[in-house]
Amino acid sequence: MNLATPILICANNDDFRSLLREMLIKHGFFHLLEATSSEELIELSLKEKKIPFIMVQGELINEGVNDILRGKKDLLILIQPSHTKTLALTARYGVENFLSFPFSSQQLFNKLSKFS
Image (cartoon, rainbow, N blue to C red; front, top):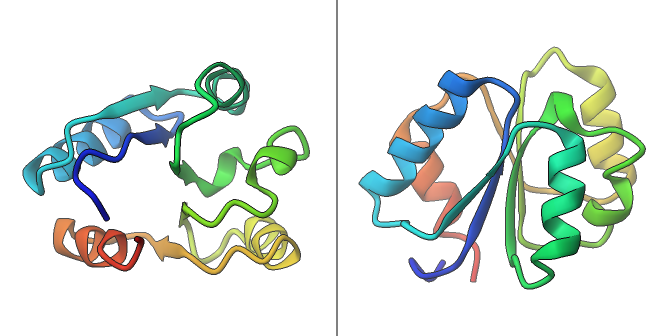
């Protein structure tokens, strides 16, 4: 993945978002946008139509964001393995890229490096 690629981080926990931001900056990603809710994710996606990459906390996936996520190739879902509703939604929409908690900075970078 190109380090200049804008990344939208969507997570409802401030500490988790901050940790993700630090992990991404550590690996050279500096063009970061943040959303704290599924509503903000929808708003930013509509406003910033050219956001190629979205990283979203699985618990925030609901029917309202499905249209944005459907068919999106540059998408990484951060998921609790026990969150079966999110697993079902990601399977239904063909999302193949997810990372289970807990994960390290290196695991995140390895996953991101698989994107073009």
